[in-house]
Image (tube, rainbow, N blue to C red; front, side, top):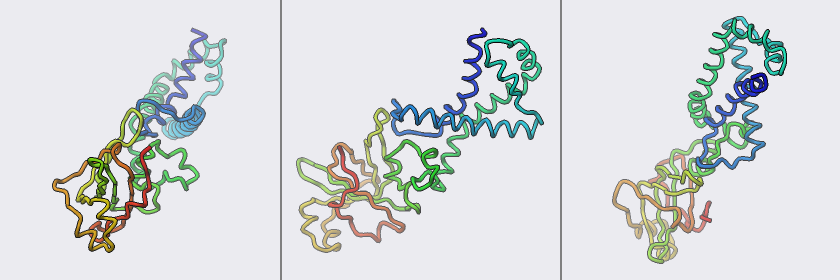
Length: 258
């Protein structure tokens, strides 16, 4: 018991940081987390320090009690633990409330905090603390324009897809996208208001009016494009209605499949 107790106490102390990070750093890849071990541990320990400082401050304000360092040190040692047991047993309600409330916060608060960070765009690379707040979701930052200074209300996608060994250009407004949860790769693009062109005819058209004239509107509310069948993918962000914008140039691709 004397050997296992320090390990249990350390686990109780540091696990909130790991839980908070796991809930906060949502990744597009769910099967494996390939983040460097040092980065995971460093972020988790930093969150642990932040959370305990916050919770100790709240405890001091509400209960007017402070952390007893001597008791904690005795519990972490292999000797002289009996006096510490007596001190803990006298304050077991507050200690239990402390950890239960902290674990509850670490489990349920991160999704709410993450939504606010996304709303106010605080997880961008430009911020010095962005590495801590940034999600492990590269497709989210690319396809949702999360790294843009100002939120785009229209995200246009043009994709060249091989259809029967014939390149077809598809163009529409991005509604949503789907990633493979096992490896985090892009799986599907969902477009609305989509058009299609035969690429050779599109290239021969000289003006925007000519290109729109030969474009074929696609029936249905949504068009689903498989990323595996995509040759090139162009992403464009607008601050206006897509109806006022010409079709994009498919030759300028921002992302290409591997």
